[in-house]
Image 1: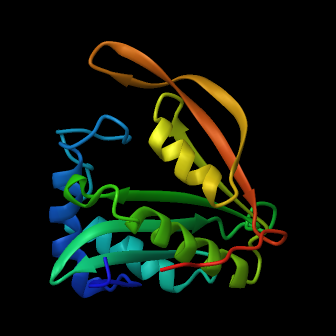
Image 2: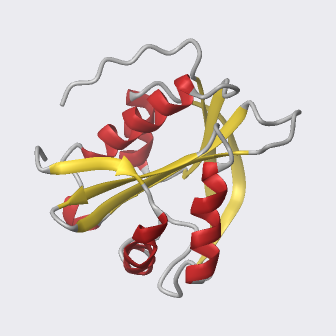
Amino acid sequence: MENIVIRKALVSDVPAIMDYLNHIGKESDNRTFGEEGIGYTVEDEVNVIQGLEENLNSTMVLAIDGNKIVSIGNLFASKRERTKHISVLGISVLKSHWNQGIGKRMMWTLIEFAKQAPDTKSVHLEVRSDNHVAIHLYKSVGFRKNTTIPNSMFIRGQYYDNDLMILDVKSCFIIMFY
């Protein structure tokens, strides 16, 4: 894991980001998309990254092993005055790199960004209620379950619940070990 570099995503990363996203959809049913892919075009992803530059409460970071993206994490916040204090977190890790501490490093990186963001007060995320490994990770960095959202995902003919988890970033204290 010491060879993993975490850095901000750049427009020049878009082709590799698209390859990564198309790959991870095939690895797990814990995402909002599957084998069909993310449904974004290269232009869509370029617009997302460019939009992040205009919002001081939002970011996308990559974990890179050699020259390969192995994890993507993001925080997206509205620009609207009434809701810009809430960021929504998303994170994924390539299956080949699970259980190596990358997810926790990515979470710490995103939380530290949120703590420094000018408006962010809390971070929200949704996770499948039966994804115990991810829930354990989120709890380990301070997230707490707020509620369960029934039937949030429909996968291969079956509905799954999601848990909404929230972190108050202005009152959290994190010690990073890596």
